[in-house]
Image 1 (cartoon, one colour):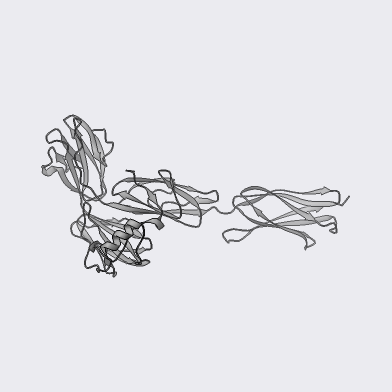
Image 2 (tube, rainbow, N blue to C red):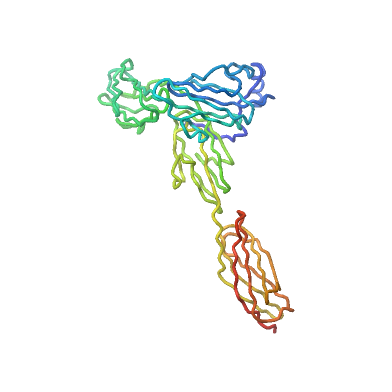
Length: 403
């Protein structure tokens, strides 16, 4: 994934200071200034802008005292806006399209194409808004060495100056590019498979670039784009791990990723939990989820608890000399507590409480010598760790005479 590294959200370092000298000192020290502002990175992609009526500060001005004075219009290439707000502020964002409408936001906090409210709890948060259409561009390592065409139609490019080397498509359209003629070597950019004459690229950025290399040339220089902060958050009452390239996330993690890079996350619930999905990003049945960073800047991974199941698999009475012990086997799928109560003619004559673990548990209940032999009833109460109704079991047993 282009050498990017994962870091915990608590360690994300955007230094917010009152002057350039203070900024340099804070950066050199690896620390933060005393200001309480956190950073919201706002990145419109395509023909439109993103605005807010929430009071905040334009950190792109080189300080944290200049108020936000207008919409973010930095909508292509390396363009974005950095706004500062007090931690915990709910920031309302509005998309303002200027062409064929707004496609959508990059966070599950904003599932629709309407306004978006993002609560800035972390040191840095990235939000991307995609507008329609987005431009696909093709560059060649040399002119007139071959011709690149597309499906859907629009690209017809044999020299970088051709009008057909740029074409607008609806956001997130997969486009097949085919190169004909020339001594083709490989594609450059996010068009795959890179070593075949026909590749597929998703038009998700403004601009989205593909380069084609001929006859062992150096690949054409493609324009650079932004890096986004991808955040992964674990939700739900269960437990589990989320990994990517061998790195495990805690309650949440974040990573700087180049816009458009493919990210692969794998979720693994712990022994007492269930995997409850990716918040709609991928199918719940998929433990591994692949997606492009940029159009997606936050992923919610949900873990729940298995429903408690308990079963009594055996009950008996063991007699040894002057001792009588009720023995039983209890099988559960989650760690919890079990209460054993022995009654004779409705009166409690023995009790014991156990912590039980997933699997089969051998439980014992000692009976006093003063308890007369004869029929008794063993009651077993298994506590629901989620606070639900306990599971109750009852078994008739007979106490033998003492020897």
